Amino acid sequence: MTKIDIIPASLTSASSSLLGPECAGRLIVLIPDMGSDYIPAIGKIWELAVAQQASVLLLSLYKDSRQELGLRRGLVTMCAMLQDGRVPAEVSTEMGTNWVDLVNRNYQTGDLIVCFAEQRAGLLHKPLSQILQSNLNIPIYIISGRHLPKPKSKLLSQTMAWAGFLGIMIGFFVLQINIVQVSKGGLQSILLILSIIPEFWLIWVLNSWLQ
Image 1 (cartoon, helix red, strand yellow):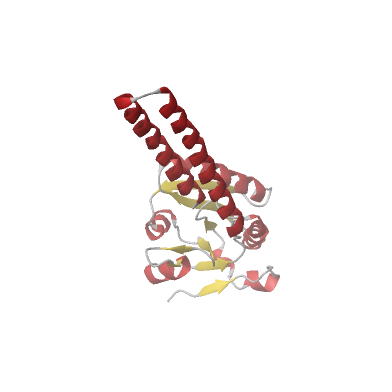
Image 2: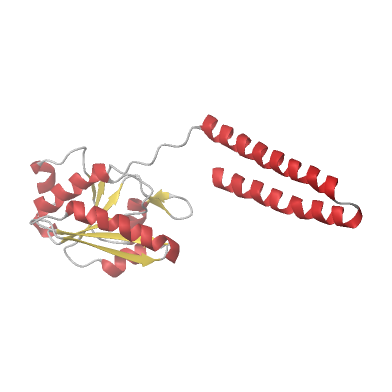
């Protein structure tokens, strides 16, 4: 079974020597998404790369082409923060959801896989480090420092939702009153039905946006 070492809050010469010179190749850092703050982890990755005299490959998966541009932009920004005369860095993205296959395709002898303690994958949302450990016989290093964005205030979300719903309902109520005043018979019924369709559509869109 592959030993998993956990990087403490700040790297020291003792913790970096724990890996040994045989791990000096590439640091393949698995980045799950751009919805988190990775800045606290940049310094840890850089110090580990310098200690191991290794280059850095930021590796990530995206589910569809709409996510790819934003993901690559974020990775390139991280790459620029890492690069200097001692730490060359590059990025790579692939479409898919299987991290084990992704690591298998990119891993070379001497590489060290770096993943975040908070990173989970699979239907059961198990820690990615455990999934990789169970399927691959390669060195894995775990770091912490991926900060999830703070959730929006529940009260604020509810207030926005009710304000939006009331605004939509009042607006269409006024529209429907005008329809009743200026039309009669079958035309009136048709116009009222047509006004209800966008009303419910807007409510659905607002509800989806606030979830």
